[in-house]
Length: 164
Image (cartoon, rainbow, N blue to C red; front, side):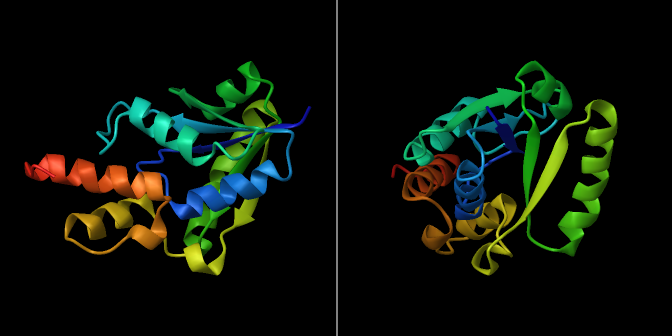
């Protein structure tokens, strides 16, 4: 069985993330969407909330499951028999950083990284940008799966103290 992992913070999951997950699911027997935990960062959504959003978003993909991990991604790969890391690339700047990571990961454990270019429609898309635009009232519905959009608006309303 070929197994791949799509790591990320997914705070929140975007249509760009979903596109990479769907495309990876077509290439591998199993894809694990791993929410990477960084205890020094405080996300808009908790890790459990992100896992639930991803599980709901990817429910139509029978070979995709979600998990979380704190630590080195290569350790996750070794413990879960993962052969490949799948990373979406939006621009050359992503490649510069991700290439270093891929080379380090391959050198540490031999796990390979597959770079998947994003579709042009998603080339500018990031969770941080979506959160910022939504915070200031911009329409981000077309950038997120419907369940994520609904939850994002609810969370922003909670943070503002709205009764919505």
